[in-house]
Image 1 (tube, rainbow, N blue to C red):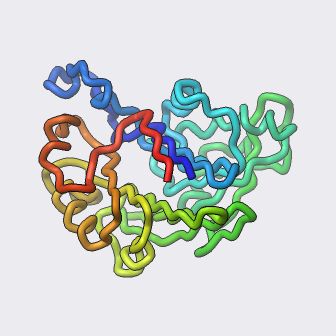
Image 2: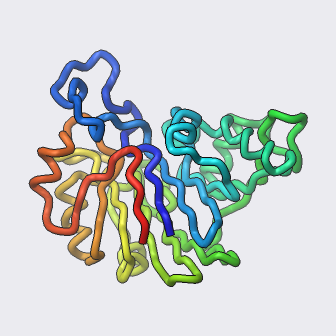
Length: 259
C-alpha cells in the first residue's frame, strides 16, 4: 500500500496570507503546507480522500494520474473546494460518474456546491459527474476494505478511515479533523501499520486535537509509526518533530509512505 500526502495544512495553509512569522518565512520545504488531503493506492485501486483548494496543483506536483473512487471526510471548504477538478478523472472514465462517498452532511454539501455535477454521466467532455453514495461502516472492494467511523469535529462528524489491503494485509488509519477519538475509533486503529492523526497546533483548540492530545492518543493506539497532519504555522517542522516521542513524526506535503 502506498499513501501520498497531497497536503498537510489547515484551512489557512502555510505560509498564511499576510504573515511574516518564522515558519511562514521558512526555507524548509516541509513548512510549506497546502490544505490536507491524501491519495491511497491499495492493490492498484486509487482512492482520493478529500479535495483541497489546491487539489489540481497537488495532483500535478505528485503526478496523480488515476482515481477510482473519492471519499469526502466532511463538507468543510478546505476539504471540498477542489472537487470541481475531479472532472479530469471523469474524462478518463469516459464521462462515467465518479463514486463519491461521504456522510449525509458531506453529501448534502456536495449537492449544494456542485449541483451541475450530480449525474450518471458528464454533461459533456470536460465536466465532472458525481455518483453520491453514503459511506458504509465497511466498504468491501476486490482490492481490500475501507472501514469508517465517525469522529466529532465541532458541529459535524468527520469520517475516520481505516484501509486494509487484501494482498498484504497492511492497515492504514487516517483520522483528521477531529477533537477526540471515541473508544470505537481507538479500537479500530489498534494493530495498524501506520496511523495519521489530527495535530493542529501545540495549544488546545475547540474542534481539533492539539499536538499533546494527539501524542496521548498515539500512545494509546500503539502503532509502529504515527504521523500528525492538519498543521498550522505554529509548528516549525524540524523544531517540533525533534520534541516528539519515538515513532511519532510530522507529515509534510509530498510525503510518500509504503507499508
